[in-house]
Image (cartoon, rainbow, N blue to C red; front, side, top):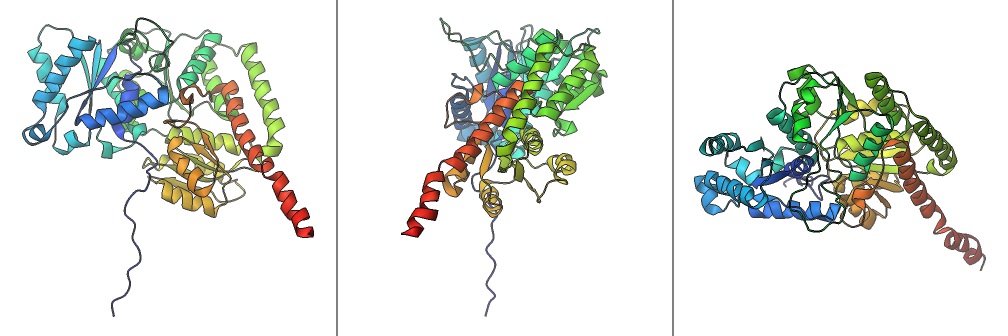
Amino acid sequence: MKEKKAACRNVNENPCNMCMPMGGILALKGIENTMVVLHGSQGCSTYMRRHISEHFNEPVDVGSSSLNEKGTIYGGEKNLKQALDNVRKVYNPGVIGILTTCLAETIGEDIGRFAEEYLQEKNGEEIFLVTAPTPGYGGTQAEGYFFTARRILTCLTKKSEKHNKINLIVSNISPADIREIKRILNLMEIKYTLFPDFSDTMDRPFQRPYRKMTPEGTKIEDIRKMSGAPATLQLGMTVEDALSPGKYLAETFGVPLYNLPLPIGLENTDRFMEVLQEVTGKGLPDSLQQERGRLLDGMIDSHKYNFLGRAVLFGEPELVYALTRTCLENGIHPVVVATGSRTAKLAELLQPYIEAAPEPVQILSGTDFAVIRKYGEAAEANVAIGDSTGRYLEEKAGIPLIRIGFPILDRMGGHRLLSVGYTGTMAFLDRVTNTLLDSKLKPYRSRMYDTFYRKAT
């Protein structure tokens, strides 16, 4: 009699990530007067436009080379060049970013060669092309974001004279977070180039007439001069060197690199402020010191509730790393820390902090929500922290979800959530504390009734 084989599972159920070109589009949207063309099927650009548009509540234009059956067999060079002509005619962009999808990479399309040939054919015309191979199966949106940001610097940055504007490279955070970082830099009277800056391209004020292209975003002229900066601060502790824009500037132009965590939480924000002071020689203004004091006061006030928290944290590695440390310093126990990215760095970086945790912390990489849910239920998690893709935890396991990160598709204002700096950390902590209080107090009367009154009768 044949032995019964154990059930196997080799598929992802509700993956904890989105595809690589999605992140590439976001990085390119942070550059002034830039348009994106996806070399692949039309459905891919439609899918990404929809997700980005729903999160930011803004119209999002992404061109497509519209690869069909014929282009897939004989090559899509003609389609891509036609798409570039169309985009230039309709939008007149300063830069065109060319990304690939799974289909184009699978059939071996060389977008670098196509771009060079296109420029030769348009000899004499001023066109800036940035190419970035971003197959969906090559990584998550987090890898796509940083890889494309690095490619932008590779294509646009030139050797420059030394100047006093520091480089600040941000990960995929909300427009509200980017604006908060700029506010802090302005309060400290620091000159900077923030890259990529989609705070105003993806969260525009209402205005008439509608403009297809906006002048906001990081200036191309500033990107060209990032090689002459006194230092680069990169908010990307979990980023591999091969994907790191800051590493590229350090290796190619000798710009000193400070790799920092996202300034969420007291220790992470303190570290951000310390490095800003060290690099620029500027002091911390009274207003920021007062904000720090208010955060400390708020942490003391909410600690008596937060210690009840048993959290599942998930999303892009950089955000998850910062949030996990924030939870630990506020008494919230992270029982599961998960990301869809295949990275060992997250576990390595968190190891010194979770060693002191009262219970083991399950760290998962390259995972999906079926696995996250299994471990979350086993650890009796009572709060989940991450983007809208984690709604399955709320729907199927009853774990309340605090939304943060990208994408947030089932709530309004996801792009306006503030979480960085002393003020943003306090806002984030309030969201966590109030969710824990809601879980505790909402069933209070019914629990008392069942425990004492019903039993007595």
